[in-house]
Amino acid sequence: MATQAAPVRATHGPSLHAAAFDRRAARTRATLERALPPDDRMPQRLHAAMRHAVLGEGKRIRPQLVYAAGVACGCDEATLDAPAAAVELVHAYSLIHDDLPAMDDDDLRRGRPTVHVAFDEATAILAGDALQALAFEVLSGAEGDAALRVALLRTLAQASGTAGMCGGQALDIDATGRMQTLAELERMHALKTGALLRASVRMGALCAGADAATLQRLDAFAEALGLAFQIRDDILDVEGSATQLGKTAGKDAAQGKSTYPALLGLDGSRRRLDELAHAMRDTLAPLGVAAAELLALGEMAVMRDR
Picture 1: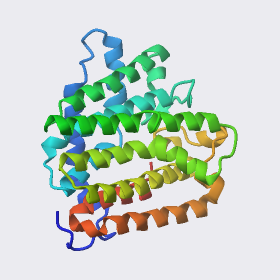
Picture 2: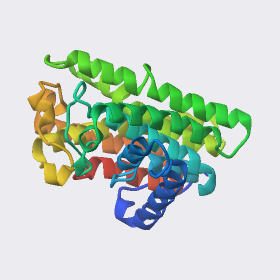
Picture 3: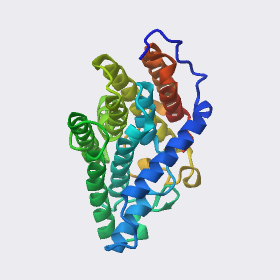
């Protein structure tokens, strides 16, 4: 990868890459369609619940990050199909479980009834379990040698467990009803939201054989992206509507959860978003125009309205 290329600029916004993003979303959906069991195969209800969770409308940010990071480092898209689908399966499983009555107790996700509402609670739990297992089955068949597959499996497993997403969710539950410090909030979201985003970027780069310095730079970008994504999510929870977001608005305040607007105010949260947008640009600048799609995804996280 060239290190003395033209700098990445903010004008490389999401709209300039819309065709590539749409194509990769279609690739991801096609891979997921092939991987998911058909809903006419027993147990039909479980399979229908899995498909309900995975194949609805969604931003597909995590698969997009896999593709953008891999392509930036010189990888072909076909090699990235399996990790892109695998990370989306883990994300879908996490949403099913997050929405359960014992967790966030939500009735709406991506503009549709959540899985436990559309089916039932037991089926929702099993669907989440099955999607997590399917993610690692898909990833085990990724293109590349055994060493690469092991690295991909380790990356996704670490991001999904107690040192990542599940650990962050546990911290979130423990903190419900009390105001966290800013450091505690950032630590929680670095695990709950950020870990899977970082894993997405890293898996794409691993597929391309990126060197240690590039991996470190992309990790720093992904860390800033994860924090920006969560701050924007918190702002939208205050300002957005259920129709706009495709999920219930105002849930965080109703459940007594700490958020960035609660700690920093809306203006302070927006200033922090702007700082993170600059940090993402600065981190990617040495990678040149090859990283333009990654930067566009970072800008999407900062500017999105749902």
